Length: 235
Image (cartoon, rainbow, N blue to C red):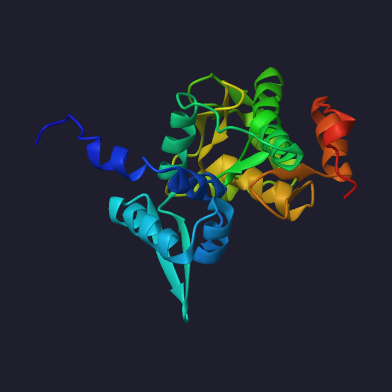
C-alpha cells in the first residue's frame, strides 16, 4: 500500500463555508445538535443536514442520535489536532460587527482544542511549565518528576494521564499563537481540572472560555501568568 495520502476527499469535505463554521464550533470537543449548528452557519435545517452528511461520510464528524434529534461531534482528538494545525495555514474568517469581534478575542484568549487548553492561556501555561522545569523539550513536552508532583498538587489527575492508552503529552500547534500548547492525556487532564475547579468556564456561545477570577488567581499566583482585565470574567 502506498504511503502517500489522497487529500482530495478531505479537501472536498472542508470546501464549504457552512462546514467550516460547524467544525470551528465542534473543535472544543462538545456535542452539538444539528439545529444549533445550522443557526450558527445561517443555513436552513435541510442544508445543514446535507453539509453534515458530507462531514460524516468523510470521517471528520460523527452523528450521535438521541431520540428524534441528531447531535454531532468531531470524530476524535486526532481530527481536532489536524484542524488546529490546518488553522495555521488557513486564512482568518472575516469578522464583522462588535459581537463577532469580541467572540474572536475570547477565542484567541482561551479555548478548548478538543479536550485541552489552547489560545493565549494554553500557550502561556506550556511556556511557564517549561520554564519551571515541569515539562522538558519543545516537541513532546515530556513531564518531569517536578511536573508530575506539581500538577498533582493542584489536583490534576496525573496518574490517570500516565496510564491512559493515548500519548501522555504532545505539543499541539496553536493556530492563533503560532506556538505549541500542551495536548495528549496530560493536556486533557489539565483541561478537565481547570473546568472542574471553575478556573475556566465555557462561554454561552462559540467555543471560547472565560478565565474566572479564581483561575486568574491560580495562574498568576502559581506561575506568574497575568492577562488583561479586559478579558477577565467575574466568575
